[in-house]
View: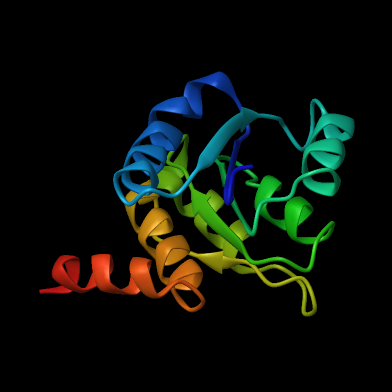
Amino acid sequence: MPKVLILVGSQSDLEHANKCSEILTKYGVENKVEVASAHRDPKKVDELVTNSDADIFIAMAGLSAALPGVVASKTIKPVIGVPLNVKLDGLDALLSTMNIPAGVPVATVGIDNAKNAAFLALRILALKDSKLQKNLKPAMS
């Protein structure tokens, strides 16, 4: 069972998801990557989120970047949004990911910063995992 489910809006976003997955795997955190567009395949997004046992969701998308907000609307678990640079230097995606309505929070990292999404997920998981806490301390030095 993955502790982190990483969702991307399209195949072209997989390079970012893979960077995120590599860091999580390095720290022994089971994760899974899925391609599911909030616009083109909303039923798949719904099924993935509602049927997942993951503790944290990381959602990456460019352009209107609806995916993080849609994921957050379907769960009370933490959602980390990664805005991707597809157009407008990623500012459109950044603003969309940051400006989610009250009650549907999405923690947002910098544009294309999939690595920080992984590290934020690790810190959240470390709140209840003392082994992970110890493993993260050298990374902070």
